[in-house]
Picture 1 (cartoon, protein in one colour):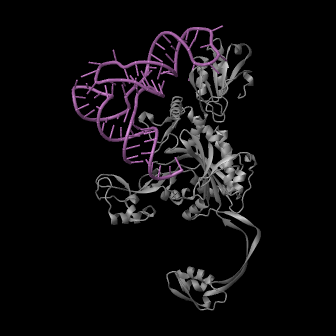
Picture 2 (cartoon, helix red, strand yellow):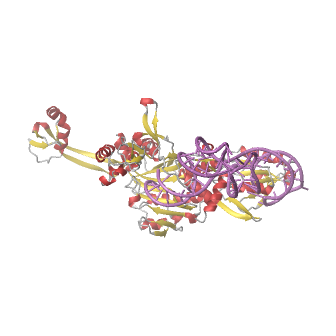
Picture 3 (cartoon, protein in one colour):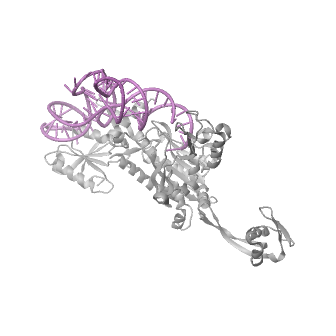
Length: 557
RNA sequence: GCGGAUAUGGUGAAGUGGUUAUCAUCUGAGGUUUCCAACCUUAUGUCGUGGGUUCGACUCCCGCUAUCCGCACCA
């Protein structure tokens, strides 16, 4: 690629300036793990904060935080244990580990779909040779999961668990508390930023694929039967680059894309717009943003429609955000697995009057008569026609026929008024890979030019995310200029959410250059005139312009 | 996981089977009325890791780890 050299210069600069560094470098490094250094740490937290602010501004969204350590059952219910697992077996001769389903590919149409027991049985039956050494000596099949597994608690009392592969499950399992918090009114959303973990086979491309990564997700719960109306007018003059599931490219406004059914759901479209705004706020180049719809066979196990937001940078087009319509998949799965109700109530406009007229059992008689079968008899009796004459034979699931006599049953006639119903909310989930976004913020902000024949590097970071807000520079460290400067620096340090740096080393031009490399938007220089009238010069990074201003009028004080 | 390439101060590079390993830049101290990487003096800091061959290994060989590029898998 043409900008490989640029990528290397950028990575070198980020390492040198303490933005991004390989983690545990002291011990040779660790694949897929990165440090955010003294400059990068705040960059990350400012992006996180901007993200939180962006979504809480919707008004019906709350921030939560759930543990990264997650019990086995939760991720089993969500489908991750199954979907993220491979079954492994090890050769007793050469220790080579193989995927059990791969070994059996020629003996079963889809071994990937087998459960562990069936797979073990098939392996024992087929006894394939080890592809490495030819021996036939396989260990018991073990699950090899892409999730980091751990034990919660000590010894035999510990229960199995995982480091979460996504933050989403914490929001789903918190649904009852969220529903109560919002006074049982949909729609509402829950957001959290935090770490996710995936034990990647092969982490690559720097920040793009990590084993521990920062993610930010919102679960937005909606009533599928009442579509929220969103205002798209803001984006009407913006043609978004939309790639549909067939690979066709459409340049349309969001309103147009929704009206022709390309974007299937209003809320998905609205979040696409909000995501677009967010990325541009961070300083992402609007020319390097595109949306791509997942093809049906590409969709994750939980999604019914999904749009990726891809950003273009040194690694090509990279998926950085996924906006998925997860339907009721997750809440339904957790309802089934936990036995708890995860539903919302929808009131009918008009109460429904339901006339019930039919048969049911007379518990006092039928109970003792049918004992364990009474429950099933009740279900069968309630299906009987009004005209039924007793006694009548009913057939149980196991094939036995029982005779139901008139004394066992009674006629039910009643009027039930139903004012509403319970349903499982649907979920629209925008999921952000913070590290990937952060990388592209840096990539897009990185500017190479020349100054006096020398290469000149700069991070043109938006002040929303710039890790250092201001640098205070005494032109000379004498005659009292150093005192004014350090006093100003101390004053800045006292201001919450303002990070100031003091730099008195080297020529003034060199100090400006250093500040430019870590993307400081403003440099304040204390010079001779400051001694006389308490003014300083304020220099703007992007155009190098300077204005003289009284210290007390500095915009950030 | 497979195949290929690579690993030298913070960064970027050069180099050698032989004893104090080189250069630039960066960083620190001092000097210099220094507003866009000036200059002078000076200092700190390197052969990824483990084993082998050898009188001697940063150099040659092997393993490991990491990085980059394909493939596979995936987000």
